[in-house]
Image 1 (tube, rainbow, N blue to C red):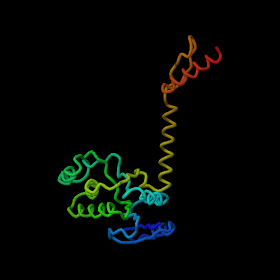
Image 2 (cartoon, rainbow, N blue to C red):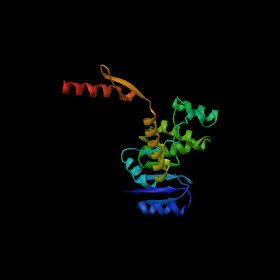
Image 3 (tube, rainbow, N blue to C red):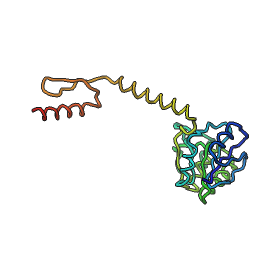
Length: 211
């Protein structure tokens, strides 16, 4: 795999992680694409090192990939009014999610290179870099893969988050009140409301077999 990672400042931990991945590394502020598949990592970014190779694999089909920045943040909630106006002129809508360019995978395809150069040109005009990136996506129209926001967390954080979601789902399940369902004249059982049709059907089938 002709792939490598560009990090913005010297970081011993990050450099050690990159070496373990067996890919190239460059510490620079440059935006060149030195490999056929390049990952740009901004300083201070929490990198999902266990998913980096997956991200490079995505570039076999996509020109670029980056995680969503925040699920509740749209183009109309960040930047200045002037910056939003410039963005709306290109996207025609500000109800668009924005992306975390701090973790950006780019393939050295024509569209990938155009995305980076267009984004940097938009950034040079000033304003929010996320809105600039969104404008570049709409101008270039590369094959872009939007990654989940969980890519901005390391493995331990993702596992904790998944565990919390699973616990919430279990608690929600057991907290649901039971309802009384008549399965045959004068005979009732209790179940969750969402399971009512399944329970009735199951007893109906049992009645057929024993009838």
